[in-house]
View 1 (tube, rainbow, N blue to C red):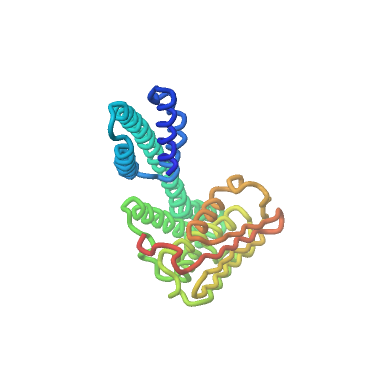
View 2: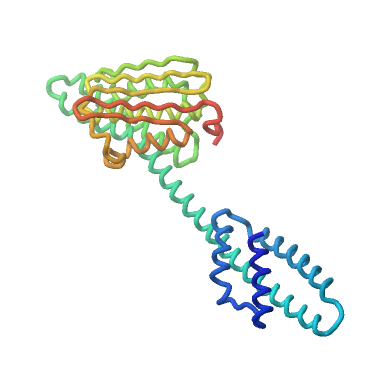
Length: 316
């Protein structure tokens, strides 16, 4: 409707001035009108269809009102020419606007994919490599005084590296990792064993029926809780970590609380590490809410809630 009114305005101005509208005189207006295509993604075929309907309607109306003498016929030809030029200019600008809209969407998709790859590498591969590094460090420290314990640490480091390789194969082959997960609690226990949490005072409490969890949501929650626990073990120097998961029919609520060194939670998330950014992104993508509170010298609490119905496409 806005374009139709503007085209009629163009025709009125041209008739009064005796000159048809030029691209220079209409470009600024047309660019402004083209923002509809750019921001709302109106396909050019819709613009062409609207232009065709408008042209036929306008031409029919003008023909009925200008019958008879040669002067009316001459004026009709002028008006039809002006009408065609004005419509054509707006169609060109609409096509340009739609092209800009598509480029913007492609750019947004590329950025989203880069963020997704960063999350997957950090949370899936990075977690395992961090565990392997930590276990290797412990083995080196215990090598002389407790060789048997050191050997166990080396085994865990090897298991973590093997798990990293397995996850990398899954990612590069496009498989869904949650297809092989046998329940959230079992997966968490296996993860805690892998990272050697039995030596670090980690307690796990899971309440509720896991059948309410889709595999996709369960996998995402496993990654979130695993990353929060890894942060507490690797960076917080915590002596006690409590992981609690409460599953209800419509929502999952979970928290990871440690008594470690803490940090200044007033700093932007990026300053506190990619892990916290990844946690926030994963929760947000599931339509949930997350709270990260910490104080230097008084530990950290990571708490999140996600809906369980319609939060993720289970088959992606």
